[in-house]
Length: 344
Image 1 (spheres, helix red, strand yellow):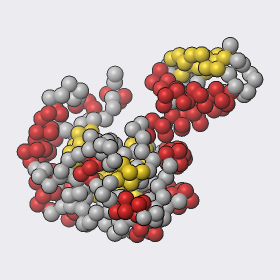
Image 2 (cartoon, rainbow, N blue to C red; image 1 turned 135 degrees about the horizontal axis):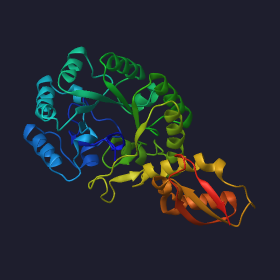
Image 3 (tube, rainbow, N blue to C red; image 1 turned 45 degrees about the vertical axis):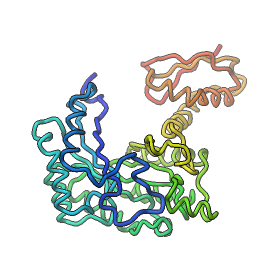
């Protein structure tokens, strides 16, 4: 496998809620990550990195990147910012780690903090924007505005950082129309990447209180998938990759009763990607009555997308064509996102 086709290697270090000025209505980072961030320091970082470097899958050709997730990195005290980054710098110097990425809020960036990050190996900054609608942001107790996100993106691009934007459809006050407008505004900002995390009702959060009181109605799983399918297609058609869809699970989050409601599925991202793939191949499928049985050929790596979660993709193909799918076979001569149909 050539270096260009290797999957990038992210080494996550979670600092749950560290630096956050307050708790947003939807958030409980310690449950989401199953970690506590208060005690994270140089010793813990070195332990994580040494373990990663000595693991079987570590390969410097995968451009290893340390990622500080879960808190508001640029809102930490400046000495703590430097201390965390300084713990990674020797590994960059030795060539084990290529760069660092951090996540932060749009309203917690200033020139001094940008300079600290720039001189300490940070190449990518992800902004927890969540929405580009001020009413949604206010109802979610975010404490920043959509314009703060615009300013932050411009400042990061001026500093030559790669920019990510994290979005959360389905927050209080949100709607399909509002989230479409959010996607339009994000497309105009031209970030380097986007993550989509549909809002979930997690036990102990302010959102749970609203839900219990009947003041908040979360997205259904089907609607969450539909919104993310449309958003991904629009973003990626405009050259903006969506690098994550759906909240990553953790042992604590998966405990019974932790997710109270919302569009949760352990394979949410796969549901979205397989639905997108089904839309792509729809023009290649025969109409009803064209055949009684079909064999589908697809690039080998895309066969799971053709099949879909628990073969739901095949059932959708059968419903459209009126034919039974009797086989799905690899054909790597086909371009990505296409299939060849053999009628029987």
